[in-house]
Image (cartoon, rainbow, N blue to C red; front, top):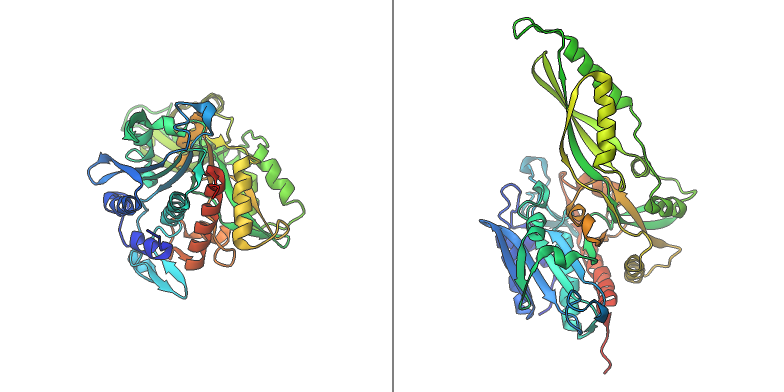
Length: 438
């Protein structure tokens, strides 16, 4: 059966999967029905009441790569999440779960993050099944829950549990080892030097939360407090704001800068370029029950290659200077996929063909994201993760998209939905196999 992408996107947007609570199963059941109608094997993995993951599989001609790596290429995984953040209807032009279409634009929560990607990937997946191509690699379609709240009931669960598909039971992690993954985070163009650059997320900074605790040293009990703790806490905050952390030039940044050499960048892109070169620590909260104890909470973003050991040394230096203690509340690892890999070239070729543009008019441009999505769970599995759901430049640029993700009046043009489907269809076909000889 064929797929009408715009109609499906509207249908998915109208299913309220606001997280919390999520309730993604209803939407995943819609996807499962489509897959089963197209005679594709799939399985729903329940992770909590009304929540879970949906995995579908197209086998390779020569069997599973995990069983016989010498017979083919590692899997290709089409990954997206179907939960969305909340929306305040009174702030929107149209109800956020109505999927109203005006002048070709579809308004609704999830049209950019990331139900549009789910539709684009499903279109490519169904096309591959219908094409009759010889698949030289396994291809998986995985739609998950709970990404917006940390993925405990989504991809994180999937990776830590077994799943049965294709007559085999295997750990979720096995699916991603060495795989190519299309995920969220890119596809939004920037305009510079007369050319369209389609950003493709090829990495993410590590993300963490750090807590400093500053105790008053001159206090003599609850009734005889001291302001010295608060004074040190304020000095600590100022120090963190002025502190320059270490950085390095990633391979991705080298490609990014060489591609944009001489081009005038928007203020937003200048900030992103700076952020791709440096680690950062930002105070997000100051709190305390009284002046005798103050807690300072910080958001930490670390480039790939900088981990816990580096952070602990920084925290030791800061705490020693201001006579306070520290605690790492959470810390996730960053990653960087190759900015010049073969799969990126396939994505670029597909993009140019779909746009009917030359390399002089448009190109794909990898970047390292400051955000934090499911891709970071795959950092230690050798997966090459690329965030890409391309849209027309006249529809939205990267600057526009950033304001809509988790924002009001989230929307996408129907032609961009069709463009993304076309690009991913071409790329998946070329990455997965070759046409049968007739």
